[in-house]
Each structure stands twice: as structure tokens, then as C-alpha cells.
Image (tube, rainbow, N blue to C red; front, side):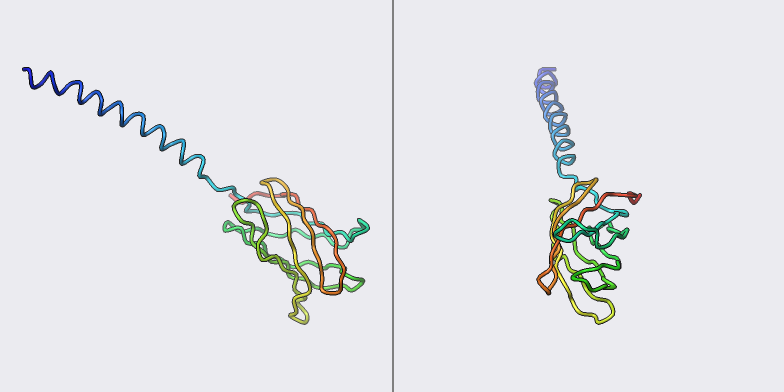
Length: 142
């Protein structure tokens, strides 16, 4: 009987530790959830004077990849432009590029940041022209 009584506090301690640890695991898993940028985003491109140069809905995949084609007036030249890049978990764009799809030449860079509802940043082409862009989420992927 004495052996059984000695085991009760040990078992209570073990269950208490397990209960407390399970709660802390749930909290740490929730804080490690990555933002979801996937879905359709309405992009608007502006020159340095704030004049609209092009608009297009682009898709962001589940891995954060931006991909889509837009017709952009960059440096008084109309480009059929492939817009590519990756949104990192911190919202920053990595490897943002603008490529002329007719010539298959890279014509500029894209940089900026996203939240889960909007994005903004800068573009620059290789003819010393630059401007800004803005994006708002139009549809979240399910």
C-alpha cells in the first residue's frame, strides 16, 4: 500500500508536466505559422511622376512565387512583360524581375514588401526609368 501511495504524487507530477508542455507546444506552433500570400493580386505600376503605366491581376502561388504577364509602358516603350519574383515569409520580394516576353530580355527589377492584404515597392528598368507599384489582394486561394 505504501508503494502505491508513493506513486500517486509521481503520477500527478508527470501528468501536470505533460499538460503544461502540451499547452506550450500549441503556442509555439501557432507562432511559427507562415503568412499566406497566395491568391490573386491587383497590381498597378506608376512612373516617378505618379502616372499609371499599367495594371494587371497577377497570381501568387502557395510557395510565394509571383508570376504573370502584364502590358507595361516603361520608358515610353510598351512591353509585354513577365513579372516574376518570390515573396519571402517576412513579406519582402526576392529575385523580382521584369522580362520583355517578345525579346526574352530582362528589362528591369522589382522590389518591395507585402502584408497579407497589400503590397508596395519600386520598379526600375535598364533605361534609367523607375517608379512605384502597389498591389491589393483581390482573391485569396483556398
